[in-house]
Length: 257
Length: 271
Image 1: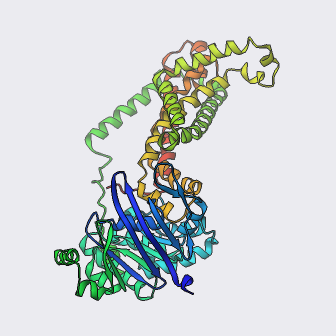
Image 2 (image 1 turned 90 degrees about the horizontal axis):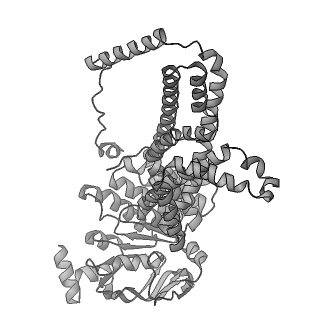
Image 3 (image 1 turned 135 degrees about the horizontal axis):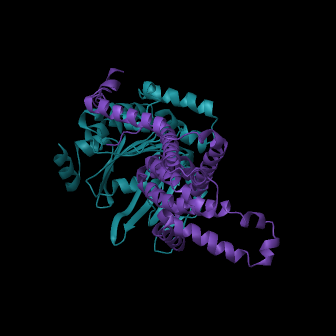
């Protein structure tokens, strides 16, 4: 029971870039339906932590467990770790819907093609079924009319909404958001947050690295404050933002407002 | 969805120019006079006699161009790729190949292959009795191989840049969604690189077209060889050469139009 409810469990994660230790033992558990916001200053390691979950960055130590399955790691011979089984990583990755700061839509494909790409070519969903799903998702994020447009012709907000549809199309166990609004012009942030907020309200499991404190407080049920590569403080949003305990968190929150 | 449409600035095309501006009228007049003079004062009576052979020559030129470019490009993809992501020794090998081929004249390579290698081959009786000999004793395989290698080297360099230029984030997105290496290469990296390289490839293919007449120097009969023959037979200088220029011009036009079409299939908007 506990296992099936556990979407992601990260334990004692370390990440070194050469002599620099970015993550110094971070553990986090996301149960199904959790919306976890990770906040922290720049250089706190929050993006690195998120990218370690789907092995875009390889952790130096620690384990990542997705839906009860621990990613098998082995020594890479340079003092770090690497996945022992590439196929396992690929299979688990295809259950995590990642949304990037810089959208990273495939520019040689239309919006619709971007959304059906992974279902058709990785998950082997029949094409007509994938298109059906994709069109429904594009309607949801308000981009149905733009389905045949190329990403370069969309605004940043539209591109990010398309990227969210692309991530949703794989019917992910967990959505990972890596600062989804940081590359957007201020007036486009709202449309993207609206979409993410809707997903949070329907109890989709997500881990969200963000600078939007107000938004984090509204949608999350758990907030993690990273500082210097460790979890400085964590708890429900009202406690974190309303009654921060640590000095660093107090300073961080006051510097944001 | 009113906000959908309002965000991008409308595309304003550059001011459409009239076809009938004074300098254009002047140029058109000059061109018309040239055409008239060429038709009226020059000798074209030989043309019908060589029509069939000319068509054959154009066909040979196109076959040479087409196959050497296609096969050359297929070689260029791995040559470019290993320089970006391959193991060191392979990358060096590819780099060395590109440097040597790009650093020496095509005519020299052609002659080295045909006169050099060709005469070495003929000293081996084993080769002479093998199934390869019918090919090795003809000229066109040497022409084809030289052109192909040349294209592979130049385009290998182009593809290296194109592969390296595909934004890392797009490849990262492919990995993040669980794509395997081969799928990522086939679906994202290669098409994206080719798309980026298309304008360059168009220019390179036009250059390749104009390299093909070199094979006439090793007795391959292409359109240039036919025109040379016409000049020897008729003692005419300008008429056949003008016709040859016109033929290459038309072929170039067709190539450019074909590449334009390919490019237009995926519109770009580079910032």
